[in-house]
Image (cartoon, rainbow, N blue to C red; front, side):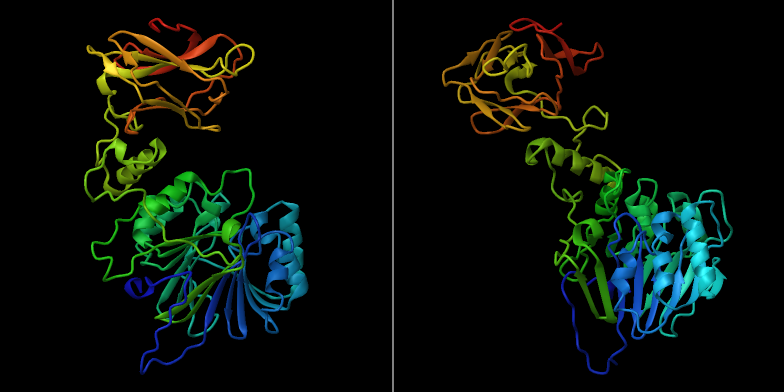
Length: 473
């Protein structure tokens, strides 16, 4: 339902068409349970729960949504952040049917889960690829994985494909990219509309080939505070950059949206029929359409066209993923890092003292060097710190730097951070002349950060004894 579903989330879409029968509404609840998964399918008086997070957040959320019995519970795999909260669910509701992957565990959480479902005396089914979970005749729920169990618990996750009224959703548990590629090879993945991003956005899941194959419109990452760095910046970049913008954006709705439970709270996608769906969040915050950092198929861009080096790097990385090459030649030396333009007239930032011995005030300085063959009028130029205090020093008008000359500049106040600091040199029109990489100087001493040659034709920054007014070599 690619073209019809690509209508919008965050805003209700309602199209009333003559002859279109009004169907029962299916609500898909991605429940904010912190770090972990819990998803409720609510179809009138029928409910199906996929995982339960840990603790009582899932139980508390679905109380009031369950009409009588809870028809089906699915435990995708035996990790605590998927089955821990199901203990409270079994204790609080009459569960008719349980689906698991048939795996076991020696953890106390699994022991409590097993005791809870055994005490419930519900029907227990083991899901395998090709099985159908009978929820309602109008709602198709198929098991795509696993065929057999393997040693890696996450890769044993039940992968479920939901189809209702033309909308297709994929629930991936915690599978890694190895399973994603296996599913691709099996040729069973259709274009989908809603993707539950695997494993809270782990860098080992959600590969580009998988994203291109399923091409969802809506992404949901169920994530909370964690020590794993979820969601990974790599995954967020893949989600933002794997797709090419439509050449006909005015004819076909192509926006993509990312929901995160740590940002938006619980997320509910309400589906009535093919042309009627609504997204809402418990926080009241709607996601903005995903926007790539640049148009990789658009007009040429140069380093100076970006508001920051970081944004330029994002564009480079996105186009490399999207198009397969450095479209705008932003990385001239091929080291994976974008390169600022060559210094104007040969003037460069040559040395930085961010952390002098004693009091920093009035003793931090930046040295410029004219590596060119002509004098340069640098009056009205500015030297700016970009981290923390983000202060600038203005070079007095009438200042000229001769070939081979060093000039140092400072100010009375503290203006350069000791870590993650990148200094910029701007001409009088605000154009970038030179910029350092992020620098760090943890030593409160007389050593500085200096621009030196690595002997292979590249400039690198090193921490060494001060060479103020002299060559750094």
